[in-house]
Amino acid sequence: MHFAQKSFLIVITFFLACLSKSAIAVDNRTCDLKELDSKKYARAYGPFDYTNSIHYKEKLPIVEVAHFNKNVERLVSGMTGSLAGDIGYTLHAFPNHHKALLAMSKLQKRYSSEHDFTAIYPKRYTATCYFKRAIYFQPRDAVSRMLFAIHLHQSKKLKLAEQQYKGAIKIAPNNPEFHYNIGLLYADLGDLEKAKEHAEIAYSHNYPLPGLANKIKKLEKM
Image (cartoon, rainbow, N blue to C red):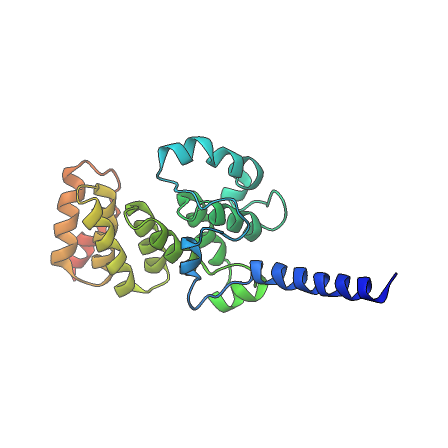
């Protein structure tokens, strides 16, 4: 092979290697939010909106049939590789895929810290980043905000959770589940008055779970 041809192939190979590396690199400080605005979205397929009825009907089955079945959702096994890989791909195509966001949150909780999670899956965002990307991508998606709030609540980041619960309620003020969950948060914070306020709204809409009422009773006895 001619020297010039060899040199050309070496340059092309190096370029493709760099391109491949940049395509899978993630930044858990910025969560690469601006990437979602790009007209040339990395790896091409998406981003699609989980709350958009057309996207849900026409695009979602293509993703889920290959990457997000019941075993992935329940964290039993991946379809094409690791669980994080299939959930991550799903969230790449549908940044606000509610079930995939919840699955990623549960998967990360198997590890003692975000650092441990990213050490095992260096090519994946933390659950926090996936939630931030979902909200950045579709700010009016109240369910994504509530799921993020629950993730933060379970992670003992109570004040940050409060912000997200409030954001969800601002979008959907009559959703009893949102009021129930922020009521649980206020009970955990020891704020009996606010816990009762949101419990009243939740139960006035016939919310079925008694957990918040039970927590309020315990606070009243203290």
